Image (cartoon, rainbow, N blue to C red):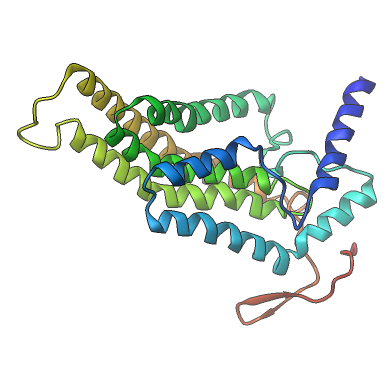
Length: 264
């Protein structure tokens, strides 16, 4: 029991020490995947733009709208609590029994369907199929990398949940394009399909099934899982405290002071 507590405390302390500007260092494999996709695949300009602009927007919002989560840090300090080591929106313990069971299965399935299998496609599939699957994989890698980077005590919980919300909404366009390309490449998109080898045909059918499966899963995740199951949990003001030292100039927020957030 004491060993477990000591491990959790060590993990929490690690987050406090390594947090810088609200962002954490992601696992090195994610930046490597990101760079390989950019170098070897043609990623649309607007996908690259969004993958940089949206995280930058969240960082600016964290600093100038939510005061780098200073209020929640002060609340935790006053209660003697450590950072839990995971985003608040994944903590369903107050709402459901045995919450980790379904959520872990959901995350494992999402990672397998959205990342692991498409990575196999990038390595083994014909170039045309690998290229068609690359933009959505790129955006999902960016989303996962950003989710891990904001998983620190200095990043406000509301902005942590905006990472999957924003990226998932944007990826709807990538999914539509991917599914349309897979449909056309399979031969169903044209009245007279060109003759192909058995291996290529098998890859085309697998590609179509993979694109359709991702489209169905991520659409349900975007319009059912996130808004109907995750967001209601975020109404809890204790887990998602409002900073009290922010003023507004029409639509532009500004932090009034740079002191530590004070309890009301």
